Length: 162
Image 1 (cartoon, rainbow, N blue to C red):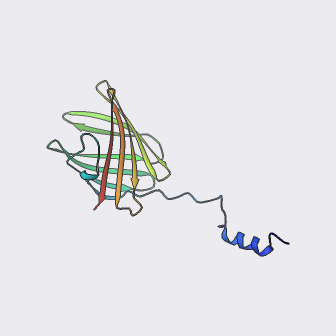
Image 2: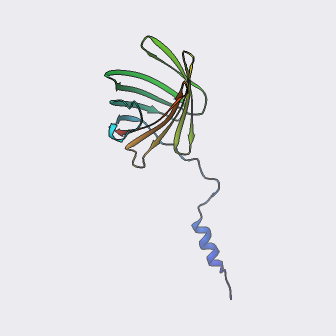
Image 3: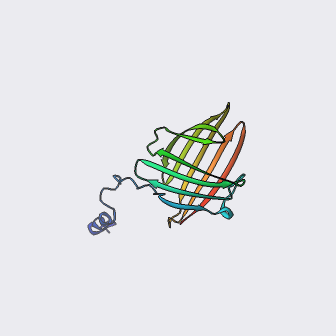
């Protein structure tokens, strides 16, 4: 009695993709587009009343133009991140002060992880944001963990593609 016929081997080889083990790298999600925050699906302290992100992305850079309304004031900022893990510096000005935010952005499979640090007049800030795109590419979730002056906060902002 034969347990393994030659045709079974041929069938098994036909089912296994050629070059298995040499798989091409997966394309990372493209967050490009205009996104509006859904406050009802966002969580954490000090969630803005509204927020809009205009994101442009290529294989090397992610650029975000943010417009945020919180506590009755609307502010706009522009940030840019290198997607290869090299440092990115973004200077944000508010209330007559400028703060340098130093970040690195790297992929963890399909999640973009941006780690940022800054100094607010002697108070060290550190934060991590995780950008995740839904399978239908219509929902962007940014989960954040931050610490400043010994205080920690966790947030989740959900954005809907416009």
